[in-house]
Length: 290
Length: 131
Image (cartoon, rainbow over all chains, first blue to last red; front, side, top):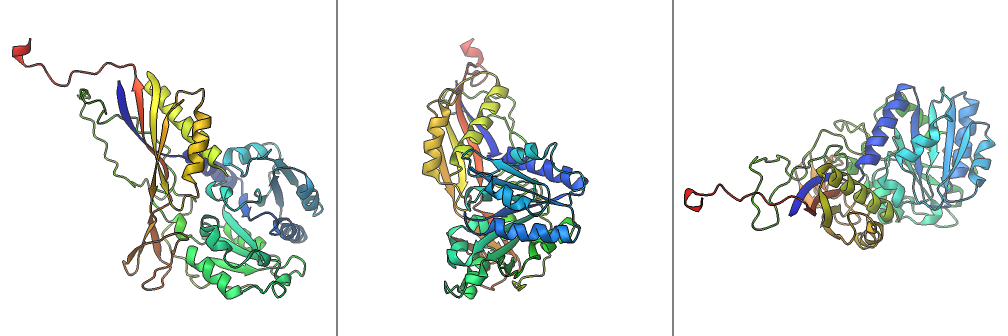
């Protein structure tokens, strides 16, 4: 017979559960993940090269994993810093998922790694939906991409713990309107910090490293409004209870089982990020670290 | 375009639920809640879903997507508003950043309509005259 089954399962429940597990495992061994998102060509690799070098100078044990559809070019560039680097080729897949990341870390990630930088596939749409078990999510945009990038990709910018503007050495040439960019970020992610950087001139280099180390040490990161939802993601459990069969003659279910899960029911603050604690962040005013 | 990954995740979860139920012969439809801020394009998802269902118990199943509008509430001043796209997530009344997003990021399988091998149970106890 025909029946309607209430599943009420988050589509990405598996990814989120995998991400929570990975975050817990890595935290237990003292490693924090930094998930770096941007469009292709925003300067993720160039900035990351500088951050890795700096980490090495400061004797912070870091590692980097870089994901691309094809070529090992980014890994070659990052490896020049001398830290452990791994290239992941996604064979066309537009994003990383938590299980993929966990698989790549197994047997590779050095035990003493304090920070693992994950350079996600260059894409501001798909990676935004996938929690990788990161402690800090950084979203980059270069000055050449236009001030309205945060409005065009609200999910990516809306879930960032830190927004980084890159290539500011080109700002004047492209007439970058910093105030407009900041107001657009503020619209989709009020209170998030915006940092201006130029990998070429060294401006702002170290900001990601500093924020990542602070987050790894347990400093409460910014909680984006978009992450402050009771029902955004995680429903690891299943309600396989049937109710109200669609078939008109069928009124079985003598068990009278009613499920008490109104839409939008929450199971604690187990949203996209594990640190969805009561919002106490005080940095409502974006700060600049030139 | 991660709609194929999303479609595969939906199919995987429905398959698992059907397996647990034990006697599902066909899935007729899947109802999905998609928040306007979920970053998923329903048309692209429907296209991927149809392709990815082939050869599974969901073959031929209809994907019914319901868009959930984004709504927010300002914790300090209690103002509520429709956030729109791109979303306005700082409070339009007091300008504060203490916003709670109440809806709009859903990406949830609400319900599945399937056929199973069970025979319908009697609707009620037969009354004595019918015996």
